[in-house]
Amino acid sequence: MSAPLVSVVVPAYNAAATLDETLRSVRGQSHANLEIIVVDDGSTDATFALAQAHADADPRLRVIRQKNAGVAAARNTGWRAARSDFIALVDSDDLWAPALIEKQLAALLAGGARAGMSYCFFTRIDAQGMAPAFHYPEPCTGDVLDKILLHNFVGCGSTMLVRRAALLAAGGFDNSLRAAGAQGCDDYLFCCRAAEQFHYACVPEVLVGYRDTPGGISSSEGRMLRSWMLAAEQMMARRPDKRALILQGLQNYAQWLLGMAAGHRQLGKVRLILALMLRHYPRIFWRIIASYMPKLTYYLGRQWKRRVVRKLRGRVPPPPVLTRFPAGAPPPGLR
Image 1 (tube, rainbow, N blue to C red):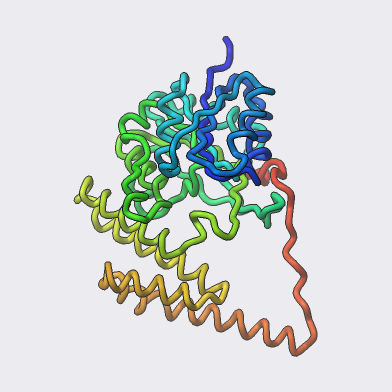
Image 2 (image 1 turned 120 degrees about the horizontal axis):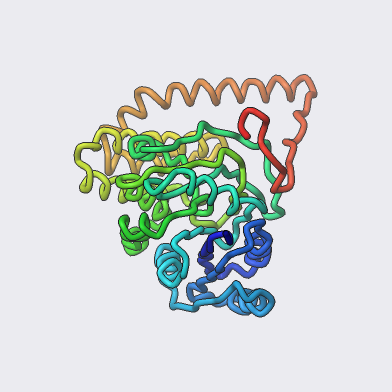
């Protein structure tokens, strides 16, 4: 039997600096039966011309242009125009390993009709596509609603291969977060909605390079936290029986943001995160102050002390070892 068609949706806004590399990683998939849809979301740079050049070279690729409406709307335009019942998503600055579609489709099909999504692990990459040591979390499969409410283990939109039935059941990607000035957690909100009715499958390998650059959507901690809050409020309205889990997930996310900001000594961001929590969720704010901040302060104090001792002794720590993405399979225990 011929391999199933998979539609790949690439939302792109002013992505001329990265789109070429992204599309090469998509076109180079070992699963060749692809329909690639680039949605140019009102770009003002060379994004359309670059995407069209790829379309001229590869008949599997086509470009749709629309007025700027945000990444959620661009994803919706793409999957609704797709011909396949299997929809893969990749942002215009991320990279795929060559076997991503092949492995995620196999995992999705192995999960049966109840499996609405397969995902894989990702690593953060810099502008040159270099990544630090890979991290392999615990895979989450089956009925994952409680787990996704506590922690966004899917990580980003570029790790997802979704059945059309799951997209329809969840209502696609919600653009109301952007309308509220808090774009960023649209993919997470979709993951929560999809998990209400469908199971998840996982390929426990690092198959996505998530480009983490200044100025990206995920680089604004205040907007991302407010976006998570809006997503949490929607889920509490849908599932009041899960309210305690949803609030714990919000606290977990706020604490993660605090750890990242404090670790980079960005005290202004720490103050912003705490101020948002105090304004919108004072009970969670006081729980963070009572339980998490002392632990974080102690940990950062130890790190600072070690740096001072190393400096006094003339010991300069080696720079982190970076690897070009993709870098192959995970350790044997996680194949």
